[in-house]
Length: 182
Image 1 (cartoon, rainbow, N blue to C red):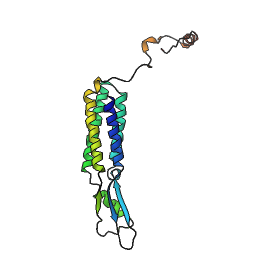
Image 2: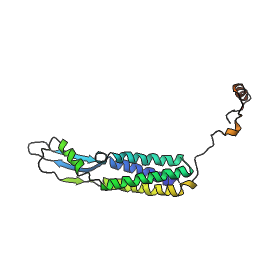
Image 3: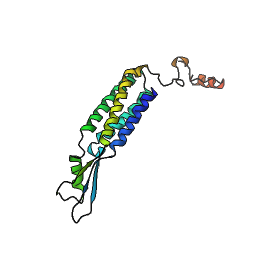
Image 4: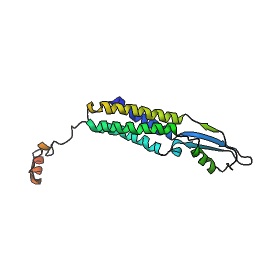
């Protein structure tokens, strides 16, 4: 259980890191103006990717707290979110219109020839991290119902509390050295 949950957590963290890196960049050179380096991150191109990475990380933590069928449901939700995010990261063209908008905001860009666009491996790393989180989440969905739950050691058992005990009885129990909440 721990390895799978830590794997989902790590994959979500790597995906979150990857979507905040520059996915495409270009150097704008215009005669008579200073050179400007323009870059677009995954968040600039598709802000939803950062939110989906946070959902994957939060879902991994939810798997630890949940149990039974609810844990399996969380696993299915993580798998669906991660699958969508991986597909979005692979199909997103950060060097297209997102970089075009960033170029238009550059003080060195006067609308002439398009500068050479340089891509980065971060979209593929993000997609791979999301895909790994999705595969591990499917493992949670299939096997998570049989994993152990969080401890109930400190939870109060309702049958041990007297239903008709009033405040005075509770104080008297404490005076005798008994914990009336157990």
